[in-house]
Length: 62
Image (cartoon, rainbow, N blue to C red):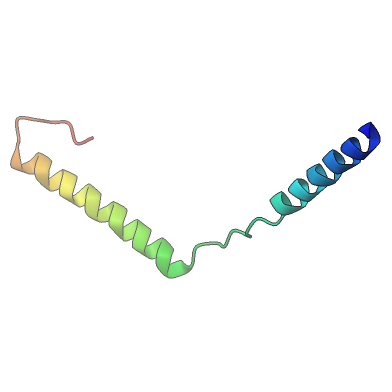
């Protein structure tokens, strides 16, 4: 009875390991997505700079 239980446990562990290995392959970002990310960061920086220019008493742009 114990041997049967151990064999079932080992089979279940093997099945769990097999399912974990089938994860998706990560796809690299395309050039257009990279450009979009860069332009979004640039827009945010421009907005922060303009807000700092609107309030000359505050020198922090962070």
